[in-house]
Image (cartoon, rainbow, N blue to C red; front, side, top):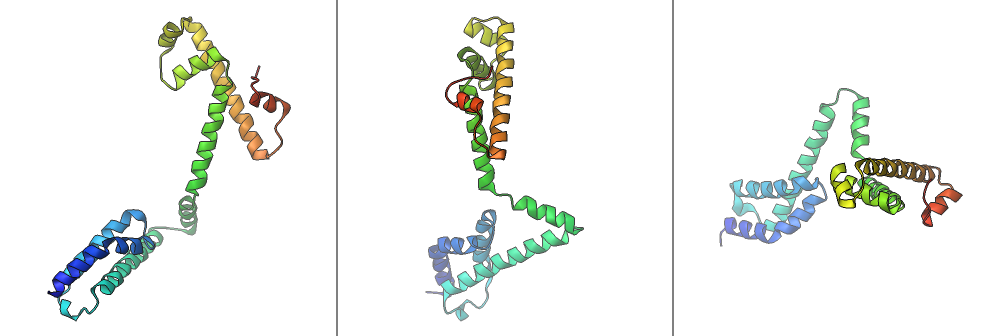
Amino acid sequence: MSNQTLLHKAYLTSRKSISRLVARIVPPHEIEDIVQETYVRICQIENKEKITSPKSFMYKTAKNLALDYQKQANVRLVDGIENMETLERLLSDQSKDEMYENALANSEFSYFCEAVRLLPVQCRKVFVLKKVYGYSQREIAVQLNLSESTVEKHISTGMKRCTLFMRKTQDNAVHEKEPSFQDTQLKNGGTYE
C-alpha cells in the first residue's frame, strides 16, 4: 500500500479526533476549514515516503494550522486598531457572558409573562390578541363582542400595568430587597389598581 493511500485512510479514520483537537484552539466556525486544510496540506506533500507515522503527522499539521490561524487572528485584531481605547472596547464587547445574557432575557420574559397573567381576564384576552397574535383592534372587537374604544382602553391598561410590573420587578432585582406588601399581593393573585 502506498503512503498516499495510508495518509488518505489515516485522514478518514482520524477526521473526528482532528476536529476535536482543532476545536480546543480555534472558534467553532473555523474548525471545518482547518480540518480540510489539513487534508489539502497532506495531499501536497512531495516526499510522502518519509512520513513514518501518518496519524501523528496529521495531528501535528492540524495543530500547527490551528495555531497559525490563532496567531493571524490576533495580529489582525491588533493591527487594525488605532488606539488602546478601541482595543479595550472590542475586548469588553467580546467578553460578554452569553449565558448570563440568555438567563437575563429568560428572566425578563418570565416576569413579562407573570405581568400578563396578573391582568384582569378581559384585559388579558385583548392584550394577548393584540400583542402576541397581532390582531387589529377591529378584529379583537368583533371576536370578543366589544367596542373598539373598549379594546383600545384594555390595550392601554395592559401596557401600563405590564410596564409598571416590569419596572417594579427590575427595581427589586437591582436593589435585592425584600418584596413590598404590594408585590406580595400581586404574586398572590392581586392586581395593580
